Image (tube, rainbow, N blue to C red; front, side, top):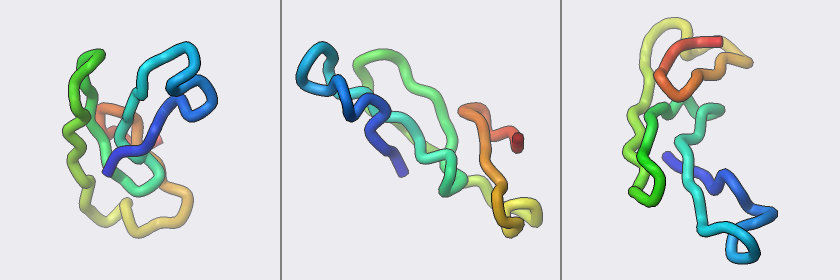
Amino acid sequence: EAVLDNPDTCGISEMARCVCDLTKLFYGENKHGTATACTKKTGDLCNRPGIQLNQRGVYH
């Protein structure tokens, strides 16, 4: 559901920051320092190759 958003700086200059995996059609937003709650988008458009969501679950 979630992936690390800052792999290059995690543990060096920043704490781990997780975001929903938009490429697998999970979406959601979280406040800084909290766990990410992701929702899986379903529907006809999800079956098309190259579909990706933004954090609010809108196709782009």
